[in-house]
Amino acid sequence: MIIINYPEQDFRIKKEEGKESIFDKLRKKWIILTPEEWVRQNFIKYLVGIKKYPSSLIATEKELKLGELKKRFDILVYDTNHMPWLMVECKSMEIKLDEAVLQQVLRYNISIPVKFLVITNGSNCFAWEKKDGQLVPCSEIPEMD
Image 1 (cartoon, rainbow, N blue to C red):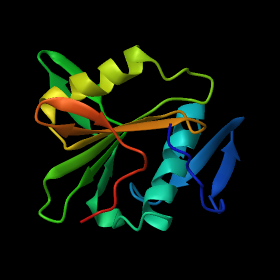
Image 2 (image 1 turned 60 degrees about the vertical axis):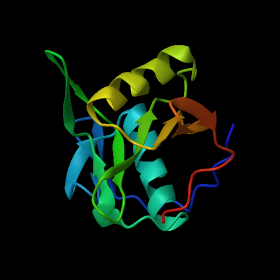
Image 3 (image 1 turned 180 degrees about the horizontal axis):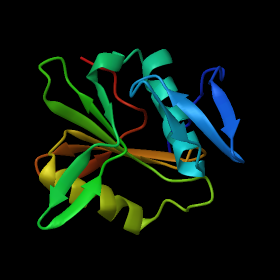
Image 4 (image 1 turned 135 degrees about the horizontal axis):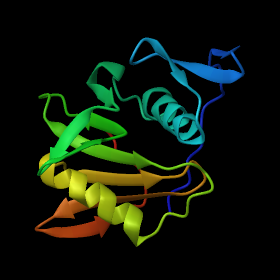
């Protein structure tokens, strides 16, 4: 498991009609603040603020196709050549990170091949590098080249 030291929170949050929304700096719009969105926003803040990933190379909540199914990945980081490089599947904090979560991100990886796969629920985080057709566990979130 990888320990994530999240940066200080300075999110813009508003409440309208009994629902909280958070301003997503990448998508430049207000998003309903679900438990999963809270994890996604904190993880993006970690990638940009701590790991120094350029925000211009991060995509969130984009559609992908799995056969006839339409799904949405949580976070996709592109390398400096704008090729998909790292995919993150976010779950809310009460969701256990198990084989089913890993299988989900592996299915997404069929449509969008990447070198690194990450799953997180905010508290726990696991990452793998794909090497020679194998998944090799990572001890930390990779540095951007």
